[in-house]
Image (cartoon, rainbow, N blue to C red; front, side, top):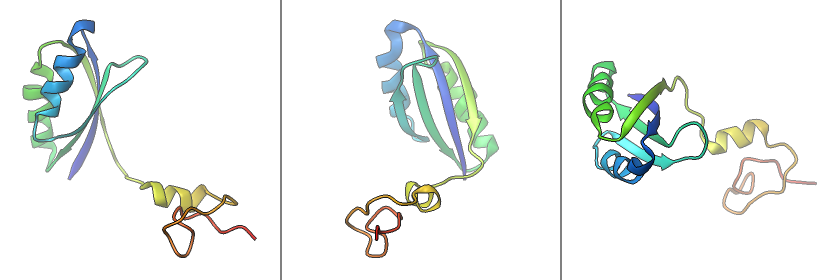
Length: 109
């Protein structure tokens, strides 16, 4: 499985129509409007690079109102719990996880 993050620039008036079109695509898992350099971020999951190329070049890039895209390939995924276990030292626990209080952070004193 390949995960790609698409950073998308749109025409100002097209943000809503672009996000709706992307959200309807089967392989687009998440769509966000953003502030900053890019207007929209889309998360794609594809079975292989050929399927990704098809989606990016023949479906996403053809959506009216998109003016530019940058596609990033994810090489490793870190869950929030794993990140907190690695870096969350000395914080108060949160309910839910019996060992760490729900966040993977060590219990205080």
